[in-house]
Length: 464
Image 1 (cartoon, one colour):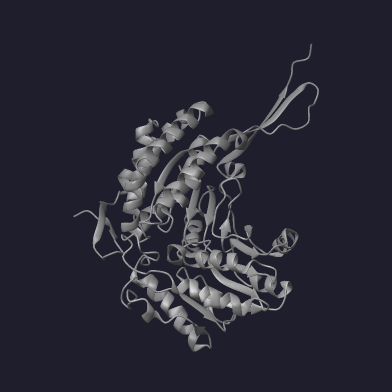
Image 2: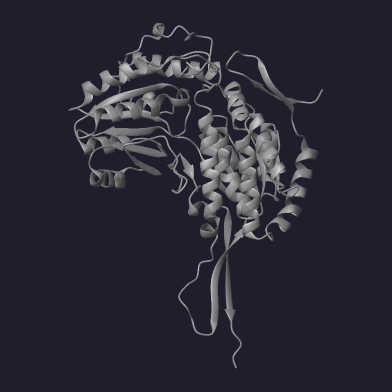
């Protein structure tokens, strides 16, 4: 019997999707086809590539309700929220398609008599995209659409938890008329994924996942020179200054910590609140979090679904219990949420105080609906604590003073600085991280630089 990939739904524990794994012969055939197709695809005028990709987005969005519903079953996000992933996919895809002429425009130095000089953006070749389950379309689209727009071929390996996502990409591209071989999805084992990214025919890798996964990709690439973009998660902080709008900060940060059951690389995982607002902030945040409805994500009334698997929920429980043993106070009694039960992926939201940086809940990625809140006395203390992390993906500053946000944001070691919002990707801005949050860049016109290589043209005109 051939090996398969199974998606066990966190909703009810049944096998929701099962697919055969693609073996070595299928991988080799896909690579050969992609190499050949890419040579033709890069010669297609950019305007035509844009047209085909726009048609693919149209096809994807037309299936939006079905795509959103199956996403709930695959990874547990409530049906009231999964349509937002389709809207986010469309926003990012259409922006990157529209931005392609700007991102791929030749760079021209100052004029020089007798010469034509410019730097063109040459596609890398075949790009492997390895995508996770937590935001399966929003993470994949960041690389898939601009890679294709730039003239690359793409091989997509999606998480075993969300195999249908890869198939939905393929359906949309097939319906749009994308040439055969330019895009292909593969259901792969970990070993075959490592072999894929290590193959000499792969010119670029876009990986989103854990730090350990990023190290595995780096090891697989060690024998060659393929470019790698790595987005590896975070322990994203927020700072609420004394001049912040309290109600706005509470609403934004509780949602930023709890949305998708906290399973977001750029979700809020630690909050620092100025002492002038601390007590009121905690009280209001507690009231807000207690208002969540934990339960069946296929019900429109549910606002907090299960985590992706029981092991993930148990990991969060372990972090919370450890922090409490170290002196933290967990403010929410899980018994308020009848669906919360050990041995299941259903986990109540949790807010902790009396926390500090000796506790993993404030230093190591939690990836669940639990957040620690610390009191601070000054901007300087807040910045020091925000930077006391091996991660650096996003940081959110809540203040009425944009100049303060610019000043403090310049001091925080992070890829993105937010003011009065969090947990959002603007496709017009570069998405990047520092430290263990990864390297490289997706989105914005700058994202195209990581999916192409510079090729200089130095043309000397014939003298008369």
